[in-house]
Image (cartoon, rainbow, N blue to C red):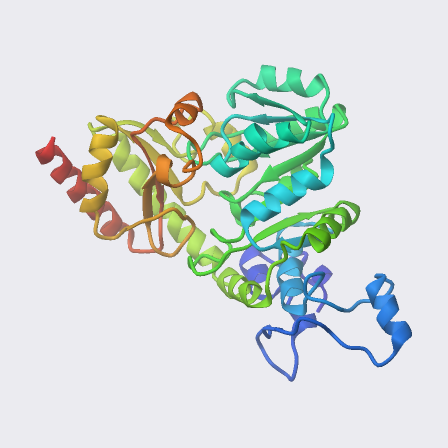
Length: 400
């Protein structure tokens, strides 16, 4: 079967089957791990045609690899893209895409509420390359549209944002970006392709940290970019020369993890909603961020452009970091770590997770308080996660 055969299949079927057929060998039912660095050809002219892209095939794994290609094909089907390019990490995917399309003298517009590593690119690296960066308050759509209309080569979006879970109107901003002649890029990591397909809403390029929900098991790193054939040709060329390619074993692990993506995400977001509702009624919590809550300021937009609200919740504790230091060690069903999207539930403050690269002053300027805690909800039983959070808060009350 080719990718077109999966067009009308459900997402749960696509994550299991899409993109794999061409990579199978020896009647295997699973994609093999092709560890060969190079691929040989007896026919010198065929070798040249493959190298020039005139014929399908592989010549060197920094450029392409059968296992990696199977992952890229799967992403294409899930996001409705013409092509995809996989990278060694999510940040390699983000930085390489920006460096592919931005040149000195260009202008990029984005929001303040992006992942900390992305924010560092905007704040530190792009200005050093002579690229003008304008970061707008995420909630101010009028200002965003005005800055976009003033001219930009790239409009970079992230929704839901990490870790504050703010929601951007993708279709509206993509329309503004296109009117200004900008390339519209979005980080879709939190939503996953199950819950949000930005290409259908006018975006040009979609990014994922495959380390997170796509792989789902906290045992591999990777990133993926997808979009039109021409745009991905340019991204692939940058990857080929700069060398941040995904290796075959990591691609295999991501493919294996993706087969359960729908099952995992549906359980994670069911528990996320339950935890968010509990946190709303917890007196020691100042604020709860989850777009599935009707009270969330971006709920209506999220309901329109998303199929589900995801497995990430964040909340702000009264008493700030003092309370964080007490609460988190009391949790039983939790890893305290700088990752998300895994089968295990993960808790962490922004200063050691999403924005570890930023100073306290930078985090505060971004609206991220020291009392903010991000929960990446796992696939454990909802009742166990809820009871665990309740007992941790009971101990926190006794300690304050």
